[in-house]
Length: 344
Ligand SMILES: [Zn+2]
Image (spheres, rainbow, N blue to C red):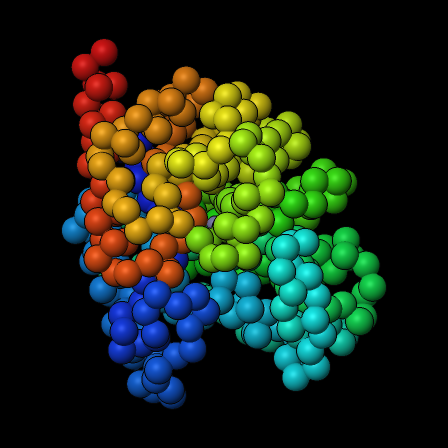
């Protein structure tokens, strides 16, 4: 699909303008309501798109301007989940959170992001990518008082995600991404049924599909967890062999400034890889040369026509000027490596 060599994109979220939501705050509540909120989100989407375009990003997104939380905003639009009835659970074995309860069969009330995706499609002729939560990450943010089976609930979510994904594809989305940070934690379940659920979610799609597996935003719960992982992060090793055999087209990974040994990418040889070359947990802006170095390292294990330079994760919690600087660095770093590849 992509004719550009090393097409750049972001893992997802970008900072919101301060008139829409409090900056540098994750999951910040909206500052507008009603019609003002609808127009505010659309204007923020336009700005976010423009910042990506000015930076020279090849595959653009809505910068997640239309959602508050990458999982909850989707679940809010489903039947069967009671947001008033809350229980405290441990998220990804890492931190406690008060979460809504599954009280009955889950189903989609109406399309969730389809109108937003149509709006983005109208704004640009560039390839567009849209992110959805993955089934396993969805079940991990809920208390299940109905199915009482993680696998069963994940399977139901996979069917719902498939309905949404098919409508996003029809709306002109070129790449649909599923965010599955839970794939970095529950290895046995990922291999037993997590990847199968993801394949159910993409069933019948003709557009490209991505699974994004990261070590999370630069929030304290995540940075504390990272300190316990030792000097070499080999989590990806547990799920790569089965992902390599899956129908997912692209795998989006954290590769820059992390302790992930780059040679693990050999385990998914043949897949397209969105290589995270921007650290989202630090405010320091990478130089284009640093980005280029990460991409050169990845090229040892990923064929050039399958390498998609990307960010490690979303940039929503960063100051806007930092995120913009990082977008510029990503595009400039990719261009350095493109020229090297063309010179060979
Ligand atoms: Zn991420």
